[in-house]
Length: 234
Image 1 (cartoon, rainbow, N blue to C red):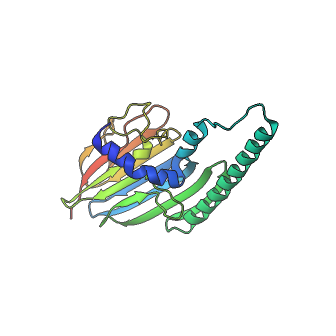
Image 2: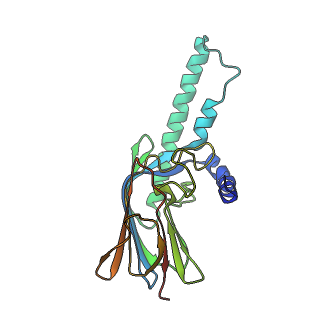
Image 3: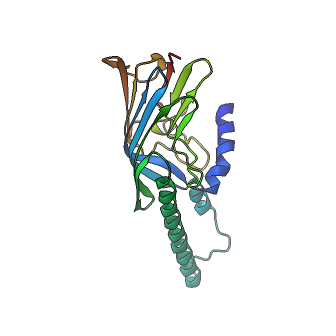
């Protein structure tokens, strides 16, 4: 594992242990970035709540457990039911927190950790933009990150829509969790009239008027996470 990956894991792990992780499900998403730094982003589809620490905790052997003890089995069942109820209440609270955030046109909690969202926002890239992030909902791992750089370029990465560079198709991206793109299924479209310095869409960009369009298909066959570097006009 590269040093940058280890550092990223170390920084994110306490956040992951503290709350849930939102990952993409079935979705359609688009990002438009103009050379004058105006942008528009949309995400319509599923957000899925995942609790990466839960699997590891459940896998730990219980030295006091007695499989033949009926009382112990009943206690475990009640504990499991209580945790499920607590998780569902937390997810409903996450839906409420997200619905208060600018950009969410609609948020509904379907149950079983699945949210249906319709998100759209416009702005100017004078600073970085990430989605999703909400401190109340404890949603800490961005699906997409747009970095406005001092050299006049903008870098876009969508880490949840594919595996990270150098990561194998089966390797987990962080300790105690699966690749966040495991359940992602849909498409991500980047539209720009800026100069494209670099991008990793195999088919390249197609021109439509003054714009260049790149479409990444996200699904069972893992591709590298969508990435592009654009040169702004100002």
